[in-house]
Length: 265
Image 1 (cartoon, one colour):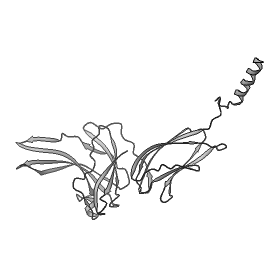
Image 2 (image 1 turned 180 degrees about the vertical axis):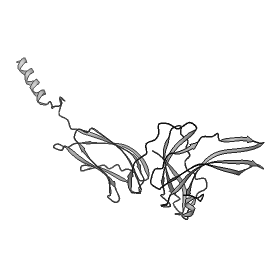
Image 3 (image 1 turned 90 degrees about the vertical axis):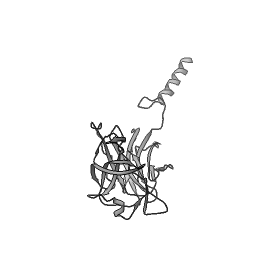
Image 4 (image 1 turned 180 degrees about the horizontal axis):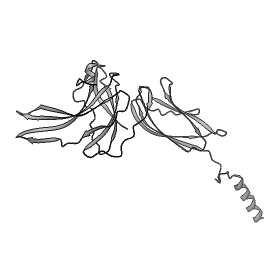
């Protein structure tokens, strides 16, 4: 009897086996990891098959999330869709087949379309820092080309006050809104306090955005002003950088750029 019982038990276990040698029948699931930046004014919504995920990708923010989905019985593939919540506009679609256990996506959604992040060089060249900029004119809506200019400026102490003595333009690149720029090559120099010919200087870098081919700030040409103290991000990393520059509004005044949001990609 003991032998018969053992055989019956073995048959039950074998009947539960799958062709892939898993002993227990289980649902097949996959994980989808999405990261990037939603530069639109609408939250983004993820849908897989008929499952709509409640957790939205916020507008104007970077994101990094992982969602899981289990295949229903009888389905060998499902459609994954990412769309604008407010308009229903689909920005990404993909068919996922049963057996794809992991899907990884990087999505940078700006200017109404998906764009690709440029591949950064492995390292900065000796004596320089590399940075690629993505300009997002959320306040001004500026559509023309702009020049990103890297400047070295000298402030001298006179009668207890800092006075701008001179500026040196070290490099300049031309970019378009919503498009990653080439990698700007910014020279490294020793900033801070210096004594030169008996005078005290403070030497520092600055990054400015001009209307292309000029030294006129692009926003002045468009009828806007910049809050005092708002600055563009400096190249400051030991590794090449890919950086977004997004205009931030003042809220109560639609013609003021209150600051620039730095987005690290």
